[in-house]
Length: 312
Picture 1: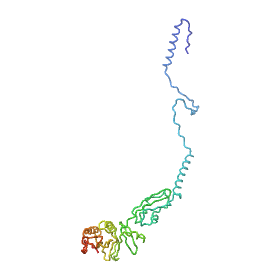
Picture 2 (picture 1 turned 90 degrees about the vertical axis):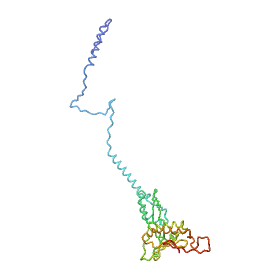
Picture 3 (picture 1 turned 120 degrees about the horizontal axis):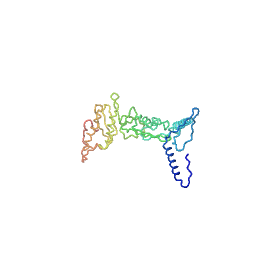
Picture 4 (picture 1 turned 135 degrees about the vertical axis):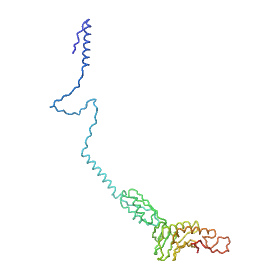
């Protein structure tokens, strides 16, 4: 500690020397090498941590607390409860299918479609593609669409194969489709299909063969074009005892197509009918007993159909 001298009058030199001395001491202090402070702790002393935060010190993130064990049990119980609710929704009676509506059926029985669909399970477990596949297993079904609606409704839209012909086998009438499917008809169904040509198979069992899908497809196409080409409808097909195949029209005349059991004979039917249509300028297919000539006194000509066809 440097004591300041007592000032007196005219003692300016003494003040000056004191200032010089103070500056020298300050300079010596500033130039003195500084040493880092070291905290020495005796071995017998135990250090203890503290939670007190120093001012201005960086704030470190608080360490993550370990999750108590009871929270894990709570999470497990919540998951089990959610699974229980989900299972209850799957098997609850309110969601079990109770209403099945079928549309698009004409010849098929709706009850038959429902039995094939087999939709007695929960609406949430219903597989629409699987239901559609089961309904398509019915031979007379061409396509099917399945839709669902909460809480327990199923809609099945069916598209049937169009009947191309009817056939009587052993006293029972069947409808035939182009792809080869057949459907047994009731009396009411057969009456509703009066405009579908009837196939009369009079062949003896020794030469009787199955009706092929190709034949049904060709006959169906021919029957659909007959009204626009000849002005009459096809009402029946006949296979006589000799195996000769014919078409009967609503005007009463018959087109004989020959033995269609020969190779390539079925594929030649459209060409035969096309050749027959050439005679429209000379004959009236709607009134085959009258000539197209303006003379009414002239008898109707006896005409011959192209090879394989003849009128009666």
